Image 1 (cartoon, one colour):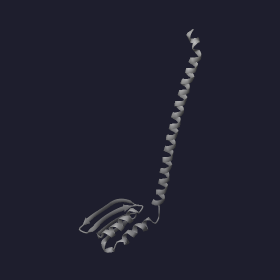
Image 2 (cartoon, helix red, strand yellow):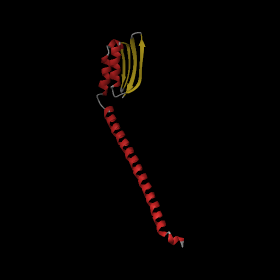
Image 3 (cartoon, one colour):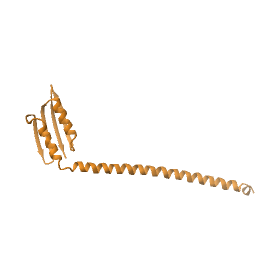
Image 4 (cartoon, helix red, strand yellow):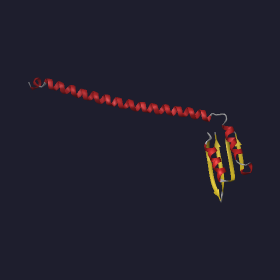
Length: 133
């Protein structure tokens, strides 16, 4: 008897609970979709960066740019060894301006720096440099 008396209220309560469940589901789906979109954007940006790096690393003029490091400093201060796509260089007795220009050039090259050791001896600098590309 009480069941029939509160039947409409019970139906309204069940509808309200279903509505809250639907709203919760929708909110969860929207947030997961936003996370997926952010992940997709991040992945696309990484792919674009990889493509840009591939273009830089496959540049045929990289060898010429690295060879310019040999002529940047006077030959008496440079000990140079180049094998295929690897360079080992040793610079002795560099002034501060020479060191600054050398390091700037090195850091602007698209190469993998394996070793960059700078030592200050009195007022001059010694640099050991290894790279590959």
